[in-house]
Length: 273
Length: 163
Image (cartoon, rainbow over all chains, first blue to last red; front, side):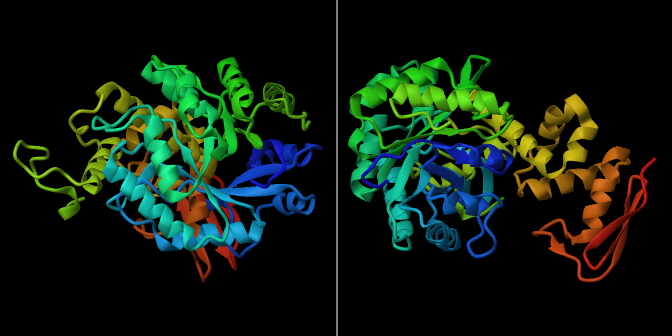
């Protein structure tokens, strides 16, 4: 993001457009890139945010940067066009794959932490950046399972990808929490090894445990442990922006406001509500 | 799916060439979306948890596109959709719901409350079951589960509601 801090933001979704429009202190939001037409009308509510000077970052979910196959050129063109339309200072996508051999998985899937997979990501990010006029931030995902043939630690894997792609990091604190919990690891250990100075912005989201596994659902409340991790991250190196990601089962406005206030309190940024 | 990208019939056999990342990713997607076996070495319980979570996520997305279809199942929507979709990779939530509704209709199992929703889409769009639906150019009358819908110049009118 830019030099100055944006503070607390939110993932814009059509279902909560009115709520987002009513946040007086909002300075940045994220929109799912695939939900925005490259040339047609913007989704209702977004133009008003842009007119207010809110920075809106397109967040891609379907590029499949971690796929062994090359990214589809029309998807890259779309992402670049949306970034220009929104006047976004950057775009973001995931270190994940979403399809293989023409079959859609329907969700972000992990890739092996191997040299071969790193090469695939690096090549796809390079193909994407050739069309983009702004930087890209890469988000490590929450995964319920790991590949059996991991060669590298998660920190080494991510650091090598960032070094070789020259990308920024979109750090999802809830993903860090979910992965550590499901692997029986300490989330602080990963935080301590990541290049926190490359964090462009941060996702914060809720989840729930089902049958012994923590699911990063984005449809449940943000757990206290995730907010504690936000506080710990900000004590070490406060990122310029943090945002709430909610993707369904939207609670009453009061609860959403309380979650935004909790992120503000944990990060030390002003409340935007 | 068949083809070279999937490698031979004996994946990972001793002495065989290591499978490419493309092949291994395709096998994993098949396990998650088409009821194929989980590739060797993965934690079966965790991959299955991901498979089930993925189906429930799809059910939620289809419910947003097809609210009446989902509502007609009540509490049984997510498990019912998951059972239907377990070996059908997603074609996007619009087509997934459409395929399910047609499938139910063909078995006389489409609830009346979902008939009007299907008839309205059938009247408005042309969908061949294999590629993205396209707006109809001419007028059309379509019926499903007792509902009859007329479309003229893009406007739809319900001629008869389902009983």
